[in-house]
Length: 122
View 1 (cartoon, one colour):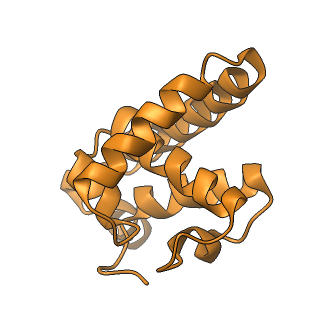
View 2: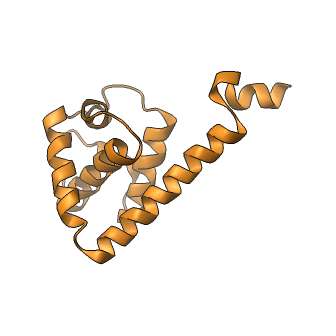
């Protein structure tokens, strides 16, 4: 279960990882460990949130109702998996897509100006 509402970046990251694993995003947010595929996708999501999206380990873990040590373990597991060139290529593509999406949204609809709402009502 979710402990708090997710930010747009949290939703994008978990949704994109779920898509890559052939899962529904809510499967990553199970209160239990779940089956291996969902657990691995959750670890990848925590890694991306921490490493690529700049979340702290505590913030990345909280997205899934876990603690900081779980996110730290997830990052170690994913770092080890990146030694596989195919896995690394897919993860690099996901990271690039997410970074580009966030950068594009912030460039076109600056948050400090009120974002999309101000752009649509101006």
